[in-house]
Image (tube, rainbow, N blue to C red; front, side, top):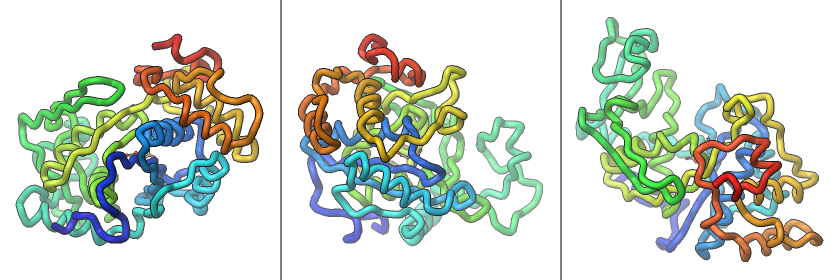
Length: 312
Ligand code: GLU
């Protein structure tokens, strides 16, 4: 079908292929480094591949040049994609093909509801209540009552969600014409052959709707593991807070050591001397996944100041 692997992105099915998929909305901060390094360590521990994908789907929120700066920062940390760096802005044809397939089978529909009309149901769409037709409607995935999806998270354990009640009919293409994250991520994760998705726990509650969409498109479900999300003292996600300081690409060793500690790993497994390649070699060899902290949220201070293993 249209969303099958394409030659530009897929190779023979690997035993483990993971990825880091930043949105170019600003410089990399400590929370992103944690997701990047954590996903890289899990991939290397499994003897697998680690790819980077640029999720540049939302031009109004993007900062010019941020994607290239993120890639340069990751490279300064020694984190370089094993496969082609795919940019979602170049993959509209694949998203369109998946959307056409869902529309043709009645699994997706045009929705004319406005934001204010959906406010009464907390923004959750269960049926169209639009009073007038819009020139550019959104497209949504139909989510029937009783759609309950559970999965076994590699770190957080079993996670179950009533997708109908908690998410409603999922937006696939926005009324402003941009592709929705949920559709693009599902199409690309399958097309690029990822077996393992490792990302921050802020996306834990997106995973059931992504699995539901995989079912609707006849795509395989990868394994998922959600790392603790670093929050500030007020509990806000770092990327949305004042504490989201960019990590310093000119001095990569301290942030890498801090990320290693935040991932629950012991400092004595990293050499004191040597540069980034030596540190990464030691990290790949000494990584102990069973030490990862099983927390959905961890404060910035805790991640920096205490051995994270104490917090387990
Ligand atoms: N692009 C998303 C972000 O930067 C991550 C998507 C994912 O890992 O599935 O938050």
